[in-house]
View 1 (cartoon, rainbow over the protein chains, first blue to last red):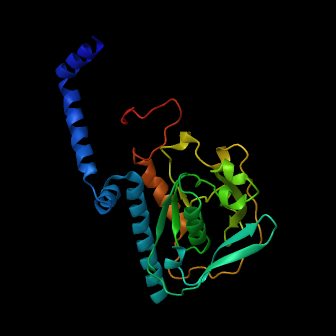
View 2: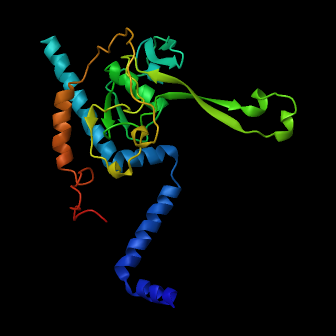
View 3: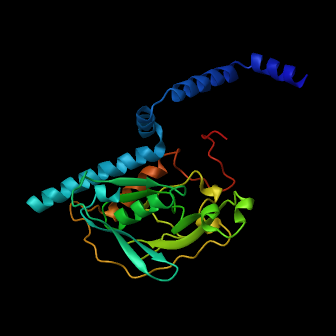
Length: 72
Length: 195
C-alpha cells in the first residue's frame, strides 16, 4: 500500500519526474566517461577546480608582471 | 613525482624508531614542467600525496590549495607475513597466521617538520564542504604526535615564485562571491543550495 501511494505521488508530480530524468541522464553521461573526459568535466564544473584555475591565472599574470618589472 | 617539477634535491626524510634518519632525494636534474603549478588537496590527501605536497611547498615550487589540512599520515608501515616470519616448530599447523602491520618509521619534510597529525597546511585555504566529516589523523584515537627534526639543505625554486599574500587576497574575494564554495555558519543553510 505504501508503495502504491508513493507510485501515485510520483506519477502526479511532474517536476519530480523531470528532475529524475535529468539526474538519470547525468548519471548515464558520467557512466560513459573516460578518465580524461571526467577530468575535463571536473575542471569545467567543480568549484574547487574553477578556483584553482583562477589562482593559476593570477599566478601567470603575476609572473608576467614580475618579468616585465625585471626587464624594465 | 615531486622530481618532475624540481631539479635534483632532497624530497623527504625518513626516521626509524631507533632514531637513524635517511634523506631520500631526486637525483635526476631534468624537469617535466617548469611553469606555474597548483596542487589541490583535502583531508583525504594522505601519506605519499602529503610528501609531494610538502616537498613542493617547501621548495616554493607549487601553490597548495585546499581544505584546512591534509590527512596527517606521516608514518611508514611494514607488513609482516607471520607464516614466513614465525617459523617455530609445529607452527605450520596453525597457518594461515595472518599478517602484522607494524609502524616502523616516520617521515619528515625537507624543512624537518613531520606531516604526522597536522598534515600539510595549504597556502590558500578554501571552505570545505566536508568540514564536518572530521577525517584525518588528528581525529583518530592514539595517533602519533607531530614533531620536528633537523632540516636539510635544498635550493628553493627561483623561477617565478608566487606572491602568496596577493594570491590569498584575490582568492578570498572570489570565494565570497561563489555559493558553491561559501561556508555557511552552523544552523543557517544557504537557501540557494540543495539540502
